[in-house]
Amino acid sequence: MSTQTGDALPSATADAGLPMPRVVLFDFDGVLLHGDAFGLFIRSRYQRSWWRKLLVLPCLPWLLLMLPFSRRLALRTLVHVALFGTGEQRYRAQAQACATELVQHSRRFNRDALRQLRRHQQAGDRVIVVTGCEQALVGSILEQLGLGDVELLASRLRPGWSGMRTGFHNIGPNKLKALAAHGVHEWHVAYTDSLMDVPMLKPAAESVLVNGTPKLCKKMDAALGRVVGRVEWQ
Image (cartoon, rainbow, N blue to C red; front, top):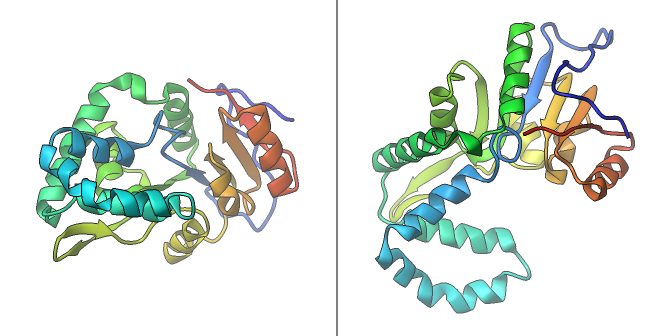
């Protein structure tokens, strides 16, 4: 298994098909941020609103029934309850406030990953954050970190009669769809911490797993059909 450090950029290849400047993709949750930003936002909604907790109670039997079969569907229900009665403008204000709170707690962020991102920018690479986190939230976080110029492809909510609801979920193969819609069809380096990003890592000339356990590295190697790069970042 190859190991890279945060002190140097992955080496460039001479493949003529790769664009110039190089395109470098970063996942957000688990790479630039320790944890799940949108999950933290949703938990804070429940912690600050007792009546939202009451709204979940009638859903508990259904949630417990669905959880073994579709964790994603169960989580979607919890998101919809957390955003019940919240319009688009109000949501954006709350997302920005949550971003401010997260950025104030700098230990939540991976300093080595942020330094590596900035190294890529300084080297003239085109950096794109491709994440399953919600766009308004992660966009506010990046802006407050001084990375507002970084291109962003993220999940999106949509307004509904009861409040904001889940829309496009930018995970797995959907990341390829988002990149294609953005006009990006080739990339050189991709950083992730998740096996769900295999579709994004496969086309990359260099795939880098951030803080992966030995078990996860083996799974990633098998899924990619090659040895994944590995970094240990704090």
